[in-house]
Image (cartoon, rainbow, N blue to C red):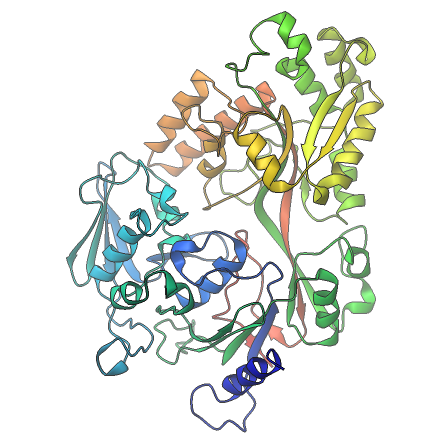
Length: 545
């Protein structure tokens, strides 16, 4: 009974959310968050579930369109100084926070530059303990990084040029909160969110339901001048079972599914990655590149005691470039995509940086294909003809990726490379990777922001783990990386990125497996929910019949 009452209350709130005629049906979008939401505070938007919710309640200075191009949001325009150290933003003059009793007369106060300065300073304040503090660490001025010049002018000052800074500002960590409310609630702001976003907080019964309602005073309009959003509300459920979530979607209790679980992938998709014909009248399939590279990583830390000379390299054969290259050539990425993923994703044969980014160029970055003869040749060159004398190689992975790891294991065995699977808990694997205890490990890297620097930072020698889990160190790579951070011309910067990616390929630092794709199954009658490469849920232009 305790769970039923909040759910009934939530439904009543949806259909009478703004005090209008509650007898008229409301256009409410329904989705499920199987992993659960831990906070509605932008400072803690560290995973997809939190990011999606924060994205509906708050705004940042800038935002991305469907092509990952920067667009105005709370800032209507901006400039960058010639030295690349000062970013000046002119704010919209008609943005108000959601109504709250802490504001004068309980009405939403107007957004000013001081709110922006407070919000960004709050991220780097140790008292906040935001997991997003790293986005500004070592990048912004240590004395006064964020300044409100006047009510509509805001500035960021950097220690040194960092071209991806505008992309960083699209991250939900940087979304703007009102000082009065955030300071009043402190850590409890996570359950009392007040922002400027297209939807307002109404009720959150943790583990049961989250209800958001339309912000009638939202500042953005569509191309025809109509105020956004179109929806009256959003209802989020928290069903942990993927199979139960899937069944609820089929019944019509949910409006879309994000991704596809192994338990029902064959029910929805053909091996060619197409929606099964019998489902076409009930739902629509959307796919787009996802900025996520799945890979296997090698530990290349020369400080480890088992490395440093030819004798020790035989004890750890992965220190030999030829062995790493042989592994890269020794299995078929195409078969992984087709048979284990129903053609979701693309084989990673063009380096580590995924397709979907503007700097991606398959012609200028040549990765590894499936070449058994080449793999055997490299093994012989390394002193292990047909794998003779090559010790078993442990590969650390989690249960969720056991099928892919087993597929690779079976194919590499055919050329004499014996992989021993070590199935461990994800948290334990991350700990091993951080402590240089995993010589060979499965990983994935999802872009924090839409710039290849987010991927190449993984191999910069001055970075620890994370993100440099391989402990790769290369003087030329470091020089190019530092040069790219100071390059304001996008075309020139992209060429530097490709050069760095080629260095990663040449040294076989990782085994790129596939570039992922965002997959959405959307019920008929829902429009405007096409995916984006960051896989952010944006509902402000979604319509529901």
